[in-house]
Amino acid sequence: MSLNKPYLDVPGTTIFDADMAQKGFHLNQFCMSLMKSKNRERFKSGEIAYLNEWPMTEAQKDSVLKRDYNLMIKLGGNIYFLAKIFSCDGLSFQVAASTMTGLSVEEYKKMMITGGRALDDEICAYEVMEDVNHG
Amino acid sequence: MAELSASVYTSHVPAIGAAIDNGKTGEDYWKPLFAGYEYSKKWVVEQKPDVVILVYNDHASAFDANLIPTFALGTGVEFNSADEGWGPRPVPTVKGHPQLASHIAQSVIQDEFDLTIFNTLDVDHGLTVPLSLMFGQPVSWPCKVIPLAVNVVLYPPPSGKRCYALGKALRSAVDSFDEDLNVQIWGTGGMSHQLQGPRAGLINKDFDTDFLNRLVKDPEGLSQVPHIDYVRLAGSEGIELVMWLIARGAMDEQVTEKYRFYHVPASNTAVGHLILENK
Image 1 (cartoon, helix red, strand yellow):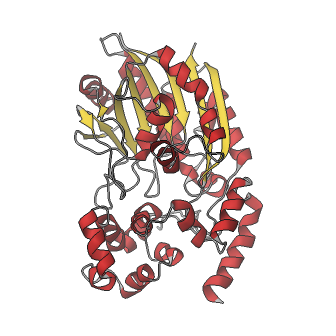
Image 2 (cartoon, rainbow over the protein chains, first blue to last red):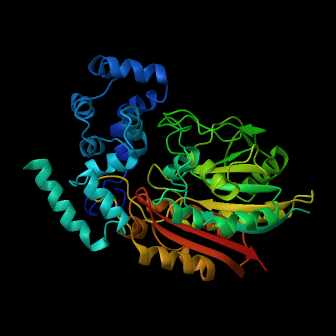
């Protein structure tokens, strides 16, 4: 019998469950390595070489090189782990979050200041991202 | 005897810590948020807790994908501020209370909560931001802190029901500790927010308001809310709110609401804050 996963149809959302954690284990552990400044320096001075030291899939490595956070999440990355990459890039959580929404940083900040994304806005935003990802 | 007198609930957004550490609390963006904690800072000075049991979650700082305990209690003497990738927050070392913490561990395990126990662990913004919000920037924290880390990163976190029941077990542990101590329990994280995917930025004020109301008046009923409701209505990271139920479970059924504050946004998050006292 398979596990009940009632969260699979929540729009624009990937839940980091046991299957995703399995898929993303090495991607997430690579992210953890960036907690050490010595590793951050090595990563910055040669991203491809550094990524090749990890048993990640080519798709995972490519998603990191492109800083495509939606894709990293799809490939098993968890946002708190991925945060080590954008921190290493000197980006705030808010800027990184905006890149996943199809909004510009300014538009995203404005949305948050005016009360955040409304619950009924989610479908609309999701469709926008489908276009962004596949258009 | 030790007495559990009050509980504090607050979000623990990392950007709040950064605003404090970098002297930005007076900026227009942050002013309303910090004004919302002025009452609480005075209140906690008057209350003088000896020990705070601080329920929080680690954000892939001390626990990576190798080790993911659902509930982990700190019985160590002290806990340093974690380096989350940009250097540790410049805050005092957190001092534990090994005797009370060990007593709690033994008591709740006998109560069928199979806790993980740690002694050496760096605590991240999940634990230090609430301390900064309540105590400001002292040279040393004015009370001992027992960290209780809850997994809310890997789905599923413990259920609301389980969290609420753990709170009750923590309460009987505190009640059976011989030393005269004024103990508080703090529940942190939330409120509605989503940090990932195209739906990032979700805020749900109605959900949050209802959560605050029910946490005060109907915690038992609130503890029955399934995870999927949090995910759908409060965002994928809004599920951190189950940690508030641990703190509420440790309180009396009837409580006095001393203070409430709600503000949107801090970075990507709705900030909620409550102070409840036992009658």
